[in-house]
Amino acid sequence: MKWYGKIGFVETADQGNGIWQPQITEKEYSGELRRISSKWSSNSTSTNYNVNISNQISILSDPYLEKSLHAIRYIEFMGAFYDVTDIEVQYPRLNISIGGVYNGETAGPEPETP
View (cartoon, helix red, strand yellow):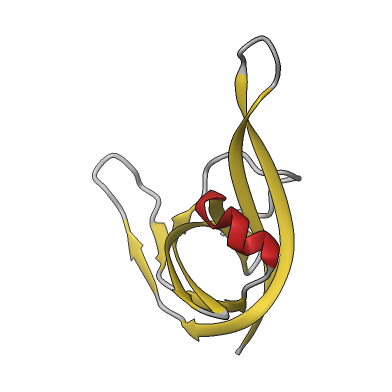
């Protein structure tokens, strides 16, 4: 199954005067879904269920990915952003595993919540 979406990179950058803030960059990529799995869970303090995705997306690496591998934080999947939980390097491919919904800052407008 094919995948197309955004990958979010988050690095801290000096904004001047010793103030460091997250700098967020999004790049669009395409690849293949290698594993599709989801799990719903709730805790005693919430009436809503949380969805945890444990999908794996395989993409071809490029020079930007190679130098920014450490900064990958989230990936867009089916209209929502999810945490990157694991990156397996199998050159020339990267196998990226995703987990729960990403709640951090993004570069653009927020997608719809799942």
